[in-house]
Amino acid sequence: MLTLVINSRAETMTSPDGDFLLEFNVEEGIPRYCLDYRKQPVVKSSSLGLALHDAPSLRSGFTVSHIG
Image 1 (tube, rainbow, N blue to C red):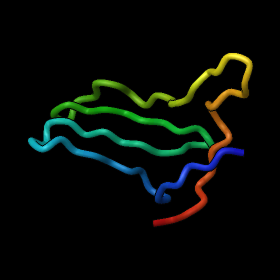
Image 2: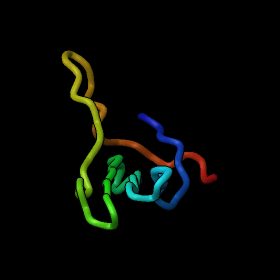
Image 3: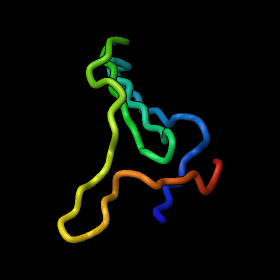
Image 4: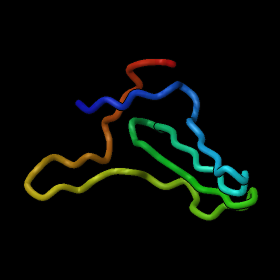
């Protein structure tokens, strides 16, 4: 089982000028992100993960193990 340490809410990062907003969260064990530019979606909610050759996928099975 893989573990991703995050707060229970979405984690966000904002560019210094405030134009970009990047958000990360975990939904049903799948890490996800989205990106807005000037409050308009650039990348809608998309999953994060890796497909590895000859190894288990790193696309799901994440849990919250620590709350901030």
